[in-house]
Image 1 (cartoon, rainbow, N blue to C red):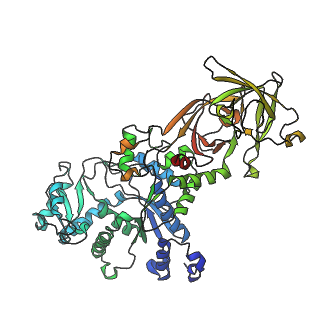
Image 2 (image 1 turned 90 degrees about the vertical axis):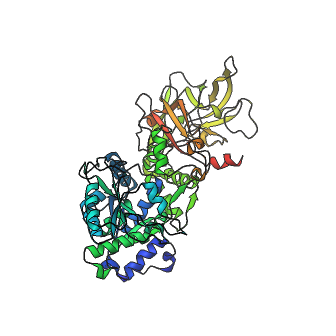
Image 3 (image 1 turned 120 degrees about the vertical axis):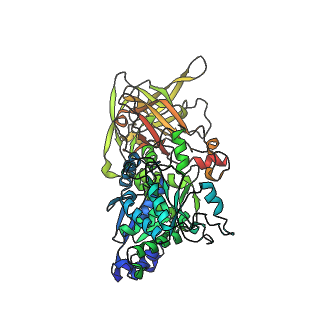
Length: 573
């Protein structure tokens, strides 16, 4: 990158994240030959959530901004938790967010290289096989203020360590019986330096390598080396890896000594930079907890619209642009924070307002009969698809004598400021006529079963008489020109703002009313043709998307978000 490209006006510099500032410093100093290469390194042991989306936006965004490349690398070093289902969904989610990778790599591509490197470490006195239990090793680690106790196996002869390490990679090796540890410093203030485990025995077949390996590298041993093998210039990760950074660099020191480039330690060395994680109110980001929600059927799967997973948000109707805009708005810092779910919903609302097609749907129907409208007559009314987008066009909605309206839009004995339907008052039926309520019919229990009204034939939208002002406008669908549907309305998944910080079992914190199903809804025929992936606004209600569970006979819709933030108001009551 040229000097001119890096010289950004001061007002633009202020908008740079601290990560981008560090990248620009490296470019200005000519590090790595002016190359920018990042990577997004998910472990394929679950589905991506919105926290991963923040890392994706940073990793791919930096590479894109500075004309570099971002590769995708699956850190598949634990076959007991990984499979191809997760790989395929990660690929899909990244593409859905709008990013393209340069190459796809796997940590398993480097298993032989890492094994050979581990052999070199043993031969050079930097690693040893330990036969203690995990509990014994943990106990001997000491505390941050007291040094650890060396393992009784720490000074084993090289030949014995080599023999045992090779034995670890056999079908007969027993899981937990032996580990390979780096021989570093048991008194180091950084606990990660106290002879960390770098290999362990796992007898589960690997999703790519099958049963070739029985001994697998730990994340801390494989991660930095994989970055180095691939030529990564900037290893961007979250704050929990700050204490891991010295170990990351130490292993690369060993690696450069191993491959004969130790004389130039700072050339082509990946630079680890850490930023804050994305945490949202009323949800959890822990993969372990998300797995529990799915495995114990506390939700309907990884793509349940209440989940913070990208596939769940996609199914609910969130757009990739809204997620990226939200992440851009909260920024990147070195301090963890809890972000309000309302900020994400506002970003969704703002984006969908620009692209969602407006349709009519009635969730809690009551029949409205226009008594002076001719029996059997129908009219095709023009409905604008999106007033924010002139290119979106329009569609037809059928008007008839018998309509469905929302039960909440009628009140027999209404207060003064009730501007919807009530006897003796006029309201406009959207895209159609002004009508005046003349009465209602009730059943034996007093429940309203039908509302009657008369229409003004001169008040059709677009006619001269339509200019008469009325204070209320109601949406509707024709009883004979609609499709019965199911609508799923979602609330917060948890009852507490920060379930991750609560000491109770997180299952106890689940909101029992996080999903309500309305199975007696009606949508206009045009809405019933919409498929998953098409953004809709049910007029006066909110944003929705068709769900894959739906059929042509009975479509299903998920509520994405309301037209306004009603959650905050509810919490103030």
